[in-house]
Image (cartoon, rainbow, N blue to C red; front, side, top):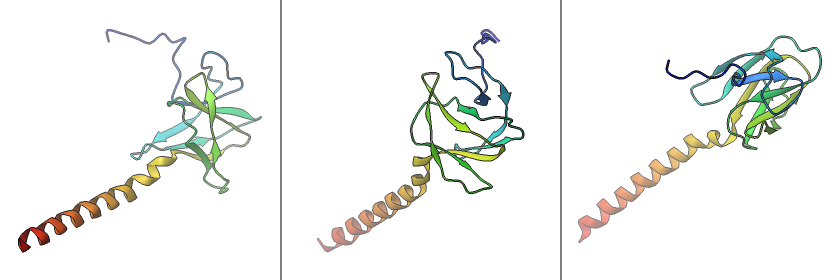
Length: 130
């Protein structure tokens, strides 16, 4: 490749760290999978003390972290490294990270399609009357 990222500045998309400093510092890597809807399934196998769980996607308060097994409530992220998202977690387990507005995509598509069909029917019905 023509360009390579300096390993000093490279960090995975999701990781655990003890301290949120100026540069990403990976203390514990985690297993994760990005799903087609843009959310992430994350597995944290071991956690000896509370740590900062970091997602290096553009910061937005609407990113939500939810522990999938214990049905814990969703938590709101805080800014990490000036552009990412971070949450404090204190136990291992299965987590899901999602951008909350993506839940609204399919209802919005359905409403838009219904409005388009309704508009076309209205135009078709009233254009035949004249």
